[in-house]
Length: 283
Image 1 (cartoon, rainbow, N blue to C red):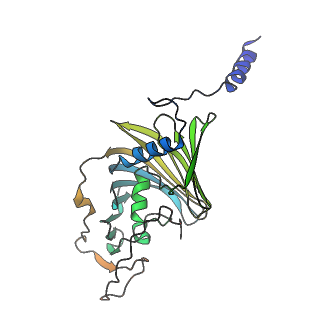
Image 2: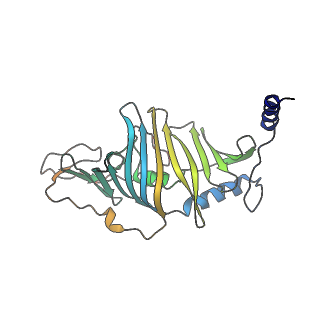
Image 3: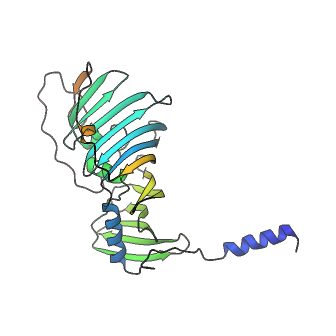
């Protein structure tokens, strides 16, 4: 057998070999409830993040990549700063969970109002409540409350497949067999979006995805966050979440829908914070 034929034979032979699956210290898990519980525990052990990231947006309205400084703390503290190609500041957004402030450097304008989903999602072409946005950026998957669940091992993908059922809704989770972190989430039967996580980093005892991707098929939109230099679960700098109007900036008050209010008009009451784990992207 010549060398080329041998190489082809080996490639075909190896492609038929079962994929080696690496499990955690407990070995292969066969109980759906056990996997579900481990997933929840491993998501809940991350409460804050601070550092640099790249945000990639693909949508009918616009596409492109921005550099960002990100600080987020559960349940709903947010601070984003965006920069252009030359690292010049473009905009910054902060929210303390009740109010938000957005500064646009080009127009020297400060927008402020209630921390509604429309307002805290101003950097994004999808609309997410603050608590949900924080959770996703911390590598967490909003889970539907299951009435029942099933578990399989997909040996081709090398992942557990945990399926949650509630009424007409299903949520299919691909779960890392070693880290017991969600690799992919697909929600069907109710309005929702798909999530995927990759490039996992080991930060001490914490496993964190270095890449987070959200796909909203209804809005034909994909968001991807790639983290660079970050710290996890550090003592949060609470000054980052303070709403401080830059000196000399024009102040514009907006309502919960993000609409500008006439100067001197009364500020409407803050809307209730949504606790739904599946807001409709682009709604």
